[in-house]
Length: 118
Image (cartoon, rainbow, N blue to C red; front, side):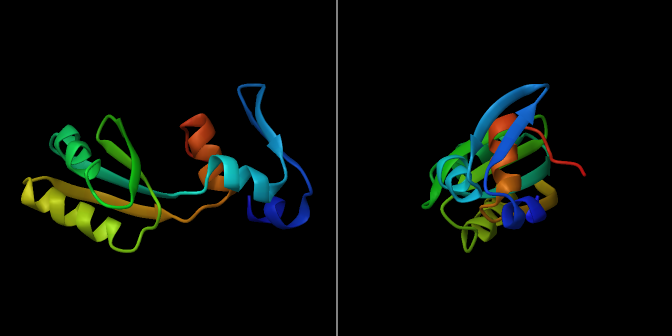
């Protein structure tokens, strides 16, 4: 993905043989991935954390997928810490946490809902 962002003038995001978006790397990021993606894998009921996350400053949207909570935020600074603290307050264990800055990978995740694998 990093090479495509640097070397390509236009990029197509394709999932299951269907083109989801075609544009310049900058325009794809602006239109489909202008947010930081914070992902937390939980032990316990992730719905409780998702409800709390929606009320945090800087959070634009929250998705749940099984034990995973995905938070689309304006920034990761402060938001990731608040999410981990909220999980602790709710008695939920965070098994894994990651933060992806706006990138073509974020665009791919936003459009397909699936992890990019090389």
